[in-house]
Amino acid sequence: MPELPEVETIKTAIEQSIGNAIIVNVSIYNKNLREKIPDDLPQKVCGAKICSYERRAKYILIHLDNGICLVWHLGMSGQVKISTQRLEKEKHDHVIIETSNGFITYHDARRFGMFTYFCENSDDTPKFLAGLGPEPFDKRIDGKYLYQKLQTKKVPIKVALLDQSVIVGIGNIYASESLYEARILPTRSANSLSLKECNCLLQKVREVLQKAIEAGGSTLRDYHKPDGSLGYFQNMHCVYNKTGQACPDCCCNIKKTGGIQKLVLGGRSTFFCPSLQK
Image 1 (tube, rainbow, N blue to C red):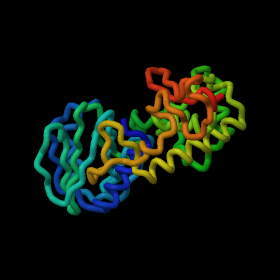
Image 2: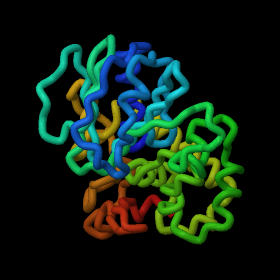
Image 3: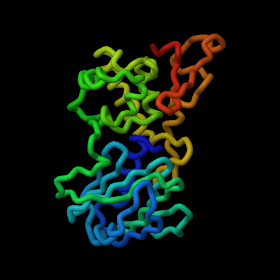
Image 4: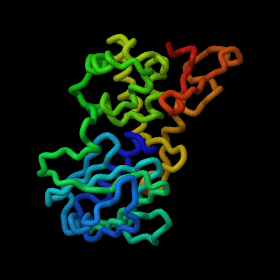
């Protein structure tokens, strides 16, 4: 699933290519995604001008001048293609947006994504945005915030980092990488972390996510940037998907330790160095 760095990369690419364009037409070829695309979406957005772009957690929000906000979630395998001319439709191209500055195509083989809208002048927060925690880069949060949030959580810290009510956007890849950088075992009970460890962990989360954004995200299976190129951060992973290998900061004898280990926590593959992480 595209995580925060991948979604941020896609949002920025759309913003830089399409900018404050006018939405001319929206062609919907398959409404049956994770949630059905509203029947009236085209008439709600056509003719409106794009005012701004935002990423909230793993959602892309496109704010329009008529008070409508387009909401995009890429699900497990969603991809975005940007072009100056209308591309020939391919299988699994579900939505094509024509703007005054070019075309945006939403491609999703598994159809676990979301493409919808909400009215920004409504008092009701959309259910998919309600209950989300702060962004990792929010300057209003610090290690003390993380420490306090974890006090009631007995689940493994790796599972707690994936809880979007604690901090949003940290997906499976970047949770493993951040815990490695912080030298914290993913199996540790979340409420066992000290304030010092929480300060370190939040700092490492931010560092890992920032590096991944600068590298255009991680391409493992389906993810491509909107120009078709691959992310680069997978080449910088320290532990993720490296079972049996030596981690870059370890001098242990992997014949004895077994190198990087893999286990499943909360239904997700988790990677760690048993020598460095405590």
